[in-house]
Structures are given as structure tokens and as C-alpha cells.
Image 1: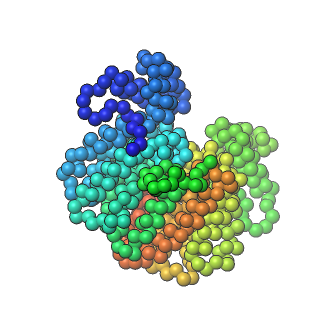
Image 2: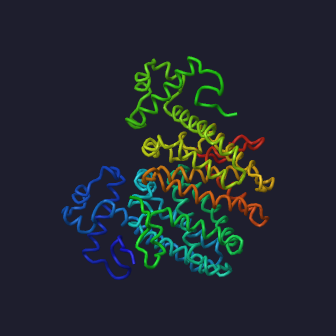
Image 3: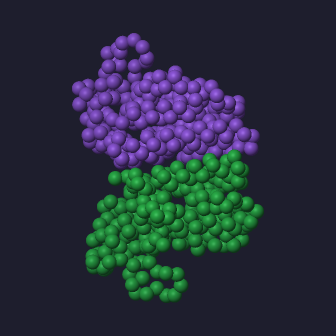
Length: 250
Length: 250
């Protein structure tokens, strides 16, 4: 189970320690937005949050860990906000559309930040990339949501051998939407919402078609291509006995 | 026919004017690599090339036009270098593999530049994006190459209604490879070459499967999704009577 970075466990009141953690994370997010990620130091974050630098480092080993904390927080907020849709809808298309729409809602306040932050996260080898080993916890959360989307689509039959693969491909298409959203300058990100809707129709049709025997190898190979070439993705489905890719980027 | 930005027409000796144009373009490329795109001014380019600022602006209306010139040059070099492969190979997979491999060869000297330049080109609304209206000429060149790849694959039957669509999707997958290549830090970009090979197999299989009636609507819809949501793409296949998308990004 990958380490979690967003602090408090669910349930119960936050402890003093959890509150400090949350305060540091919020301060960091604010400073990243105001001054830019590159220009914000751990020292500045600590000062602004009113904690010692040592204390800040105790909670977050560095700026990158703060970003992981941010990813985890978004993933957790998303999971909560989408519950209502997943409890109500039983059609694949409605479930997936809800998951994407709610993600766009949740992410709205962070759009400015995402734009300026993008150049740090676009590199798949960066720990800040959604494909990095460091982002594993947030990624796992997001993929497990897609697993639930698929499992709860009562009319959609999914062959056994695609049950783990399709949610990862669905998550990848969500990453495509996120990329589009980052660059979306329409008011209220209106085009992103429309892309989510159109993309959902396509994905649902793709999932429907994926069951056909003639197509299954293609689906499996597309998935293999991603797992072989995106660092970190290989860890999503751990291969027993193998530690990591032999030809990892050096 | 979109405007061409790389200077000399094919055939014949370059005129004085063409030579000046090429000199400015080469100087700009060198300065972009040495100082970064953002920090290089038209004035610096003119000085370094030994021409007046007015003269530099006469040939290129701005830095962005120099980048278009660079795109056009890469596209032209690619078209020449790939000729031998296209004249020899008749199998879709071999033809496409050759096109991608030769592109990676051609692009090798520009890798450093591409890395630092990426943040300017990643935004689909930037004129420097491969999807922008400004990049139309280079994009048309590249897509027409894929059209030739497909047309010359003698054993590959392509239904009429997919003949214009598939080359554009093949070009899109090439753009995926380019994105991967930009971030590839392996020696000699070895992983990008392997991705090109693996991706080619998948694309060839996809093209083969696209002929099935059950899949054709999916292929068409994927293509529509791209043309509707990527600025500039809509112009690749002009729709008679319609000027542009009604809901263009404002």
C-alpha cells in the first residue's frame, strides 16, 4: 500500500499534528499560487505558516511532497463528492460523466495554479507527474474510482481479463481531460465540460466494444504500451517477483 | 494552400533573398538553443546574423514565425529523408515504422532545444502548438506523408470514409511520440525508438481493425473529437461553406 500524503485519516477529529500538517499544506498551496512553485521555498512556507523550518520538513520532506499532499487531497475530495453520483447511477455513461464532471468542479479553484505548475508536472520522469512512482497513492485512489465506475455499471459486461485494464485506461483518458482543462481558457472552462461529456460517450462505446474477441488483444496491447513506457505505471499492477523495469530511465 | 515558412522553393539555386532568410532562421535556432526562446529577441537575432532589424522582420514577422520556419524545415527534411523507405516498403507497418524512425533521426540535433521550448508549444492555443492554425503548413506536410504511408500500403484495404481520417489519426499518434521523445532522457533516445516500433505495431493493427463495420463509427467519433476540440485541426479538412467553429476559444 503506497504512502498517503494528505494527512488525517478519515473519521475522528483531527489531532494537533494533523492540524499542523493541514496548515502547512494550505499555506504552501497559497504561496505556490501567489509566487509560483519554483520561487517558493520550504523556509518561506514554514515562516508563513508560523512553524519552524524543521517542523515543516518533519511533515513534508520537500516541496514535491507538498504537491503529492495536494494530489491526495484532490483525490480524497473527489471521492467524497462523487459518492452521490455513484450511488444513484447504474449506467456506465452516466457514472463516468459524473466522475469527470465532479472532478472539473472540484478542480476549479486550482486552475490558475495548475496552469503555472504544468511545466513541472508534464515531464513523466518528474516526481510531480501523475505517472510517477511518487504519485502512486493519488493515482491508485483515482484508478480505484474508475474501477468502481465500471463495477457498478450493472448493464455493462466486462470480460475477466479486462477488469483491471479498463479502469486504468479510463483513468488515462481522464488525464487527457486534465491536460485539456489546464489549457482551457473558455469562461468557466466550458469546453472542458463539453469534452468530458463527449469523451465519456466515446469511452463508454469503447468499453462496450472492448468485449469483442477481435478487439481484446488491441485493448491489452494499448494498456501494455502505457505500462511499459510510462514510469510508475508499471507499479500500478505490481508484477510479482520483479522489482522494477529492467530498462528504467537512468 | 497554407503559407509556407521555410524559405526556398524546391529545385534551383537559392537566391540571395533565400540565403538571407536561411541565415536568419539558422541564427535564430542557434540563439534559441543557447539563450532560450523567451530570452532571445528579434534584435539579437538580426545583430548576430549581420542584418538590420527591419530586414529580419521583413523575412519573419516575429519569433513565432521563426519557429514555424523551423517546423517547416523539419517537415521538409523529413519528407526527403523518408523517400527511400516509402519507395521500397509496401507493408503498412514497415512504412509507418520508417516514417517515425526517420523523424527521430532528423530531430536528434534539436532535442535540447525541444526540451526547453516545450513549455511554449504545449498550449494548444499557442501559435507554436502543432495544432495551431499558424502551424498549418507543417502539419499539412506531415499529414500528407501519412496519407502516402497509407495509400502505398498495397495490402491494406481502407474504406472510402476513413481515407482522410486515418492519416490524421496516424499523425496524432506521431505527436504522442514527439511528446514522449521530448521527455526521453535515455542515451540516444533509445526508448523513443522502441516506442515508435511498438506504437507502429498497434497503429497498424488499429488501421486493420478500423475497416470492420462495428468499429468505423468509433474511429470517426474519435477523429471528430480531436477536430472539434483542438484549435487548428478543424482547418485540416475544410468543411465547405463553414468558416470556422462557432464556439471557437475566445
